[in-house]
Image: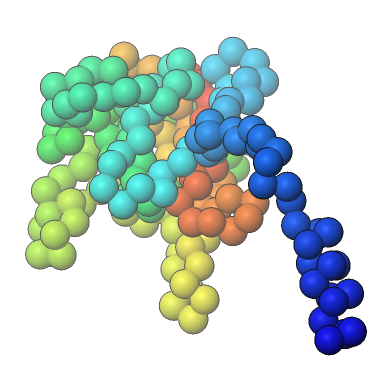
Length: 194
């Protein structure tokens, strides 16, 4: 009896008062961690693409995440992200003409003029895996032992809906806490093909 009394007093003294009013902040956390604009046309941001069913739509020119009711009729977006998928506003995904080209074996920092090449749009599923043939299908390496996605040593040139050209790179697929689907990306406007 003597042992239980001090223990119960200790428990009571550490409990918060039920009479005190506590203020709760119900504001949802903003996972889209804003833009860093170093100069005109140079952008980077982390995009919350964690949802398994809804896309996050991005306007490359304004560095804005935009609200899109119907992506098949909207001209307000260039690319969209959902988990590890990235789609373009053209062809099977939208009414615009956004297309991209993979660049390998070149330095992102030193790349200033868009290449003349075979720019691609997303295509319908051709291998019966129920996933469209995204231009960005192979942006990562996958480690089956750790289930970690790592961006490849490459980048893309995107011709946006207004015929402006951007070099575009995926830097990371994880938040600082290790949560997947937080896509860190960067892009910069470059000169059109000569």
